[in-house]
Amino acid sequence: METIDSNQMEAREAAQVDSCPFNLTLFATPKPFDHETDPIQRNAIESWKRLAPSVDVLLLGDEPGISETAKKMGVRHAAGLKRNQSGTPLLSSAFQMAHEHSAAPLLMYCNCDVILEPSFLDAIECVSRSPVGKSFVAYGRRLDVPVDWEVQFDQPADRDRLRERVRLHARRAPVVCKEYFVFPRALFSAIPDFAVGRGNWDNWMIWHARCQGIPVVDLSDRVQVIHQSHDYRHQQNSRQLSYVTGHEAKANQRLAAGRHIISGCSGTWRLSENGVERVRWPGLNWNFWRDLPRFARLIIELFVKRG
Image 1 (tube, one colour):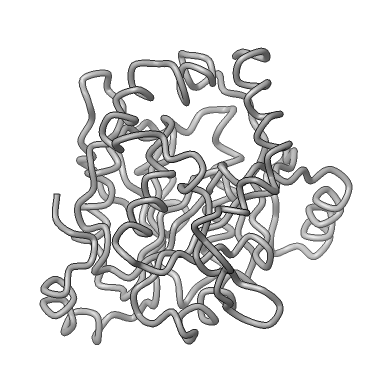
Image 2 (cartoon, rainbow, N blue to C red; image 1 turned 30 degrees about the vertical axis):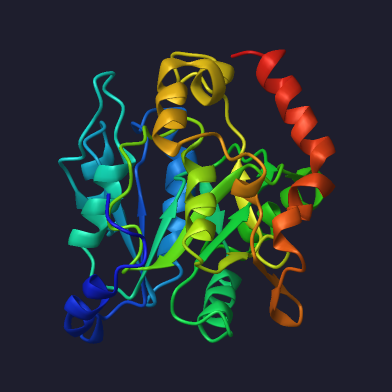
C-alpha cells in the first residue's frame, strides 16, 4: 500500500486537474435498486446532482439497476468493481476506479443513502481556502431522518416537507457514524481491501490520515447531511455481524490494524461559524468522550436490537 501523502501522484496528475471541468467527483457504491432502496438512493443521487456544475457524480459497481439508474438520472457509471470471496464489493477497487475515472482535484466518497444540501459546497470551499492547506481529509456525521417518499427537489413544497421532517424527527448519529470523506486526489489512491458496508474501515480513514500528519477536518457542526433511515434487510446478517462480529467486519479490522474507535472519529481541525479552527489537544479525542452516551446507545442497538 502506498503512502497516503503521494507527491509524485500529485505532480503526475497536475495537467489533468487543470483541464478538469469539475472541482469535485463524488463517487458511491449503490446497493441494488429494488423497491426498498430505489427511492432512498434516487433521493441521494438527485441531491448530489443539484450540486452541479461543481460536482460530478460517479456510481460504481454492477448491482442490479445501477447502470439503468445512472443513465436515466444523467450521472456517470463505471462497472467492474472487484469483490471479495463473499461477493461484497471492495472499497480498494472503488477508490482506485474513482482515481482512474476522474481528473477532479477533489474526490469524495459518500454513502448512497445521504441527502446533501447546497451549503455543503460552501463548507468544502471554506476548508480548501483555510490554513490546513492543500492536503486534508474532511468528514462528517449525519442526521438520521425517516424519509419514506421520493423527494421532488424542484418543488418548493416538497423541499419544505423535507425540512419539516428534519426539524421534527432528526436524530443526530454518534460521532463514530461517518457518512462521507472528502480529500485531494493525491490521497488514498490505494487503500486496503476493505469490504463495503462492513465495520472498521471508516475509522481507519481518520486514524491513518492522523498518523500521516494530514489535517483531518470535522464538518459535523456546520454541515447538515440527511441519512434516510432504513432497515438492514439488504444485509443477510444483522447489524452486529455486519459491523462488529461478522467475518467481514473482523477482516476489515485486521486490515485496519485495529478498530481505532476513539482516534478514528476525532478530527484535528473543525469547521465552526468562525471558519476552520484547530482542535485543542487533539490527542485527548474529546469529540469521542463528549459523545459517549450516543455511542453507548449505538452499542445497545447493535447487541440487543438485532436485524
